[in-house]
Image 1 (cartoon, each protein chain N blue to C red):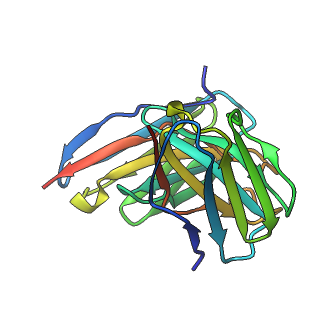
Image 2 (image 1 turned 30 degrees about the vertical axis):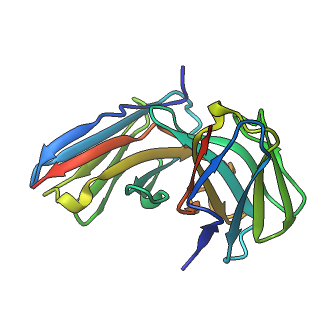
Length: 111
Length: 115
């Protein structure tokens, strides 16, 4: 079993829809949770970061962590065609220099 | 702005060739990483380095080696390329000993095809 599981999709939704992207993990030591966005033919870039459980909001994006269920989510409100990308979750534990990544979910927002 | 550059965007090599992938970062980061990215498998860590001349194996080091002679440069070497090493290779850097949430900054990637 992989430490981090993420549905690779692809996921295709109409413009304006609410998008929900999810990851599950097995290592209860993970405390830091990140979402990276990767546009086609580019490297990943950090979109949001969350520590421990709870929610974090940044504009149209909300990151949610439920440590009791070992489940994290990224919500995109009022989705735009420019949100079309691959979204990767990543996580690590205190002091770790390495990140553990999910497989990435390819998202397409249709105008 | 952190900048991580990789020597080539696209590379085509033949089976058995020795291949060098170069990565340079300009933010004085101690940590540098090499990943490969394949459909359905996500990012897998090949090697990382936390200091000059220091290296540690990642999850899939077989068939690869690395070199870090200068802080800003981290090279990935395929000693004898094989077709199963056809992939997207991504380099990243980050601050050593920073907060755990200190992000890794990625280069644009090198798409390597081995024929």
